[in-house]
Image 1 (cartoon, one colour):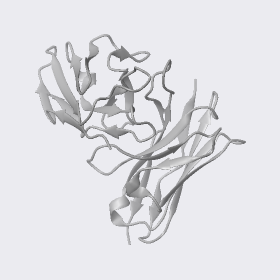
Image 2 (cartoon, helix red, strand yellow; image 1 turned 135 degrees about the horizontal axis):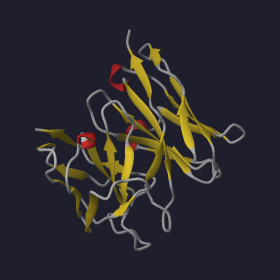
Image 3 (tube, chains in turn blue, red; image 1 turned 180 degrees about the vertical axis):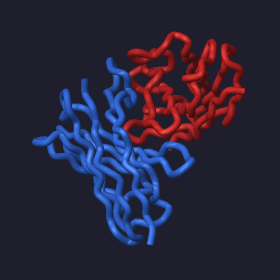
Image 4 (cartoon, chains in turn yellow, orange; image 1 turned 90 degrees about the vertical axis):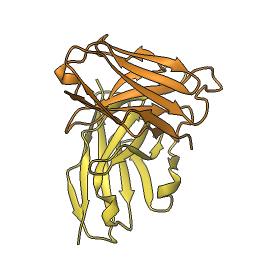
Length: 122
Length: 113
């Protein structure tokens, strides 16, 4: 059974960058899309972007274009999300999630990481 | 982007009683492949979201049969036939018809009266 394990909590200064990792274990990594979703304190879920490791091309929500970079390292089955020019409003829990395909598959996020708290504070 | 609107935003329910959550999309969620990529997620306090229902009405592995989904086009419903204490949390609908650009509803908080 595939599990997604994320890196630990981060505290960052405004204007800096953060890079969060998401390591897949127990199954195939390359052929499924990995997305990043964030949740500000007490708020809902917000899709930031995603990538299919085997293709390597990322797609981003317009809101984060230019500030977020999603990459993968197939050799270690790890996805990364880097967010730059951090501001206090970026304080949130960041989740990675596997999208289990369209058509004959669920067409939904079936596996989620445990979440990484990123706090942006001076 | 497709806007997903959930009602109600809060649902106090008596244990053992049913609960219902509605989700409306700003445009049809029918994909060109004929599927409708509307799913429901449950988020218990302090936990990551968990997939409950996919493609409108299919229960994900391990999801109790008291959860059911229905709907078509732009209007969808999640029902819990008899609410249990472990069902407390926030429920989100999500569209993936415009994958990779997915969008979520605002969330509906289910709590026990």
